[in-house]
Length: 109
Image (cartoon, rainbow, N blue to C red; front, side):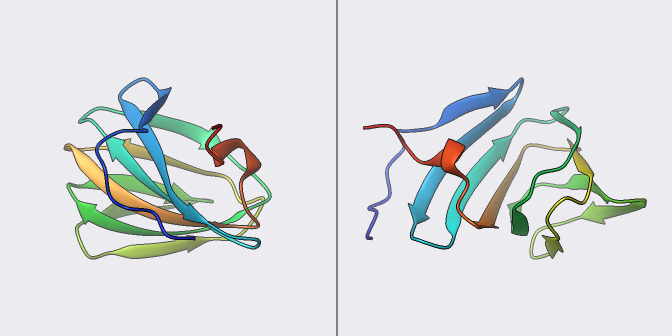
């Protein structure tokens, strides 16, 4: 699959949080998240392994019981079914890969 960059296709997933699927295959899916300062992603878990990279901004990321101040260039991997949450300390952009594919993030055409 090849996906050309565009400014469309972002969807609101929570207040101050937008998501766009970048590419996906049979076993993984890559998405971009835009978080406005103050965005609060509540504690949750899912069966997907989630690997991420902070492109810009700053977030506070809690994985299990550990909280991290995440800055551009930092990355993380969250095992499936582990609770996690995030708070955007400034406007931020993160790229994340999910495996297996998150069916709810596959664009509807």
